[in-house]
Length: 104
Image 1 (cartoon, rainbow, N blue to C red):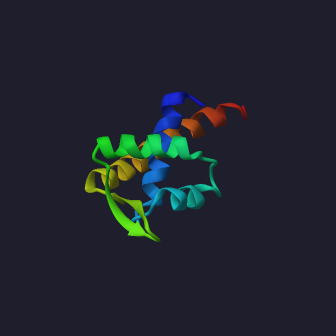
Image 2 (image 1 turned 135 degrees about the vertical axis):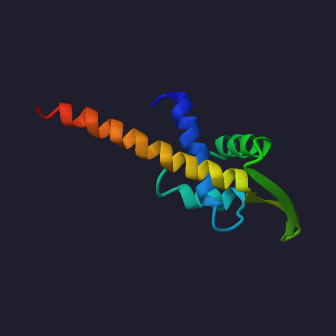
């Protein structure tokens, strides 16, 4: 898969994982595990990029004597999810066109 496309898909997967409720690193990895394998270093790179793009915000809360970072999706992040869904529909139409050519 093209590296840029994969990067975009991973970003959207992380945003989708926190869409309904704030979450933290380990839980995001656990929630995504059924669909993809994501290392901690990859996840934190993605989270930093999404924060810099203002698609999420971070807050720290004490949990069992340690600070835990919780990630919250912003309106910009929600818009990115919607944009991705629309882009994906367009890609699926292109795929359907290409795929039907294989059957003639």
